[in-house]
Length: 390
View 1 (cartoon, rainbow, N blue to C red):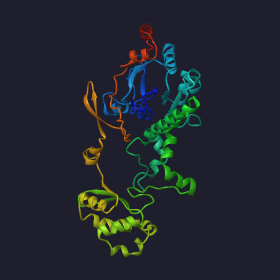
View 2 (cartoon, rainbow, N blue to C red):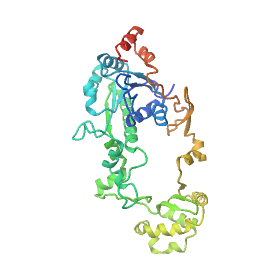
View 3 (cartoon, rainbow, N blue to C red):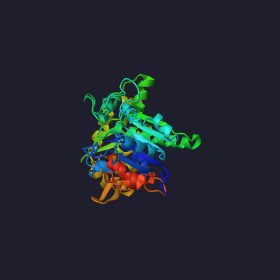
View 4 (cartoon, rainbow, N blue to C red):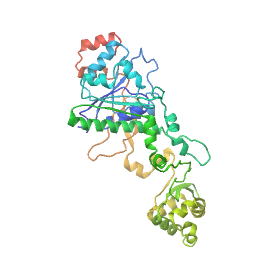
């Protein structure tokens, strides 16, 4: 039995933030039922990229799939009947959609008081922006990330991954697990909700609290760490490396490894504060030495001395790295049509349990079997199909 096998999740999510949330539960064995619109409602066959593509396959693995027309009376009645036996419903519609469909928390908990509803929106369930459409890059901009990303003076730069989408999904998954733990004591479910904006502001972490506590507006620092020197990107004879050397002990190790004992006697390098105040000079001293040897030579020497250092990889180089291969981050999955594909496994490891590796199902592949498990007879399923409710 997988750790979450006792929980049934009804998945109404689309695109990325919601599916990211549900994947955390599916990977560890939850009975996730992905509910997609019927052909009559969704002629474009859903959102989130091509079904056979890497993005969709990685996001929707370890689920079962059914189709349902939630805009029809029979379809919504079918969904409500499934809620009676479910543990969690997850959605990332605009806030008013679930009210129109009659599947908000008040309605769902009237059917099943134990239900947990997880909701992700762009800007929150209430407030002046509640009905705005949400998109990751918009949240990156409004949450402050783009203002601190990039080289000094470059102007706002987006992160290379959908940070707001991914973190909103992760925060919602954590909230759902918290609600399920509380339910063991109270017997009642909760409404768990966050937004791309809330998640993005939370992910700003120390940059955000530098403002809330000290009134300090963080600026772009490029590849340098905003508060620690020397920590950043340095050229070598054949490429670049990252080096993290905050604190006096690390500085002493760097000086010894690079053979800069005489140069380091300069008062500009005496303390953390002076090195940070003289960042350009500090970095220039290290740069003049680091460019005399290869990245591999310096990474080996610095790590041997206990100084965090590493190469900067492209994605092909990431998965060629011996440590990444040792950790098995490229997870093989047997797909009935695509053959063996490799997805990215869940990053946490739980001793004695493996991350699920079932492929993303075809659209509606499990409709009959799932409805039968929820108590629908073959005759009822046939009628629902005739009425285009499933």
